[in-house]
Length: 505
Ligand code: GLA
Image 1 (cartoon, rainbow, N blue to C red):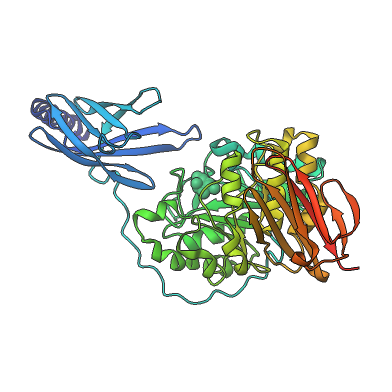
Image 2 (image 1 turned 120 degrees about the vertical axis):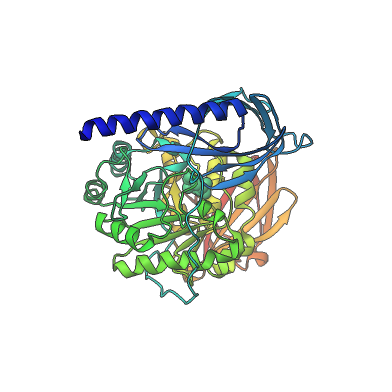
């Protein structure tokens, strides 16, 4: 009886579904929420939702990615075909979308300048597709007590620059092994940080789940700890991370507790996915929320704020519990990006102090897009800036030259100096820049940089540095230069550096 009823009901449902589909197809109305699900290869999917509203031959709507919703322009419908664009034709970088509807599927071709066309298949989704959860009001601000960590800038490795979404348990273990074997750990690089793409969804109780690239985070933490290293992880105050994975929105306390239970020692907390629910002015409150949550676990967890230097984060990052905060957008592995970021950090200098550091982004040293000379400049500049030193290359296959740059202990000592002062620009003369960093014991680090395209001479008088006669050491040639002369001149190759340490006699 039950069987018969359900079969009958099934037939009725099928019949009404077919008739509905026929009506819709006949009307050729593209109005709806069309969902593209692209597998990430780890059991999770990246969703893009096309929200289309047809009115006659006019189409309006938006394209929703996990961390953005962009209205489109110039939408038109012609029978079963439609078209719209991300920006007006005057924008040379616009994407044009051409779609064809076939029942509950649409095929959408993305046409972008200089790139091959991409064809996506979208399915008609439910009314909830792409919709955000309700906005939780940000908490009232209060100072989060200092957690006592990161008295010198954190050092370690992060997966993003080199591996992007291709990081997994085996790679992290192999990187940890390599850091022990190649001397990185002993040079001070102790944090092994997993960036975005480890997350899956949540279980029924709201507990964050790892995707199949990370079968057992606790076991991984135990492994990394067993090597004398620490494990870092990544999340977002929004419902989604930048790569579209599960964020900590509404689960800050749950996630902090989960991280503590796994044995996590460092959290990078990345804004992206919060931008659809909150204004930039809400940043301090949302970062404070996780600052409080981490603190409540009782586990020492370094807290890294990643919101690209917006809202003058250097002025409030420490108050919300941050040990470091990004001051810029993402670095790329080329001279233009690295030098633009590195030489643009002067104004943040006064805000760095033990426990609280400006973060001009992770190192690109060894990723192949710059020369060794440029990588030495990268390392020198980051050390002068008292920047976190998070290597971003594949440490399983590092060359001796790159390793010698990353593990130059005399340069690392400038970064890790106990005074905790950030270097500032002393002088700029065309392509020549001279930066200094006060060190403990009245010593001074001096970086002479040539940003130009040809070898050039840099010169500085000892009075300008107030180090006349100070004992001088070249930290890249590892040689003592004797007392600092009244006038010091040095030839510096294009994009190169001379890094000195001058100590009182
Ligand atoms: C942002 C951050 C990067 C990295 C990616 C991961 O772009 O700035 O450092 O964490 O997200 O998706």
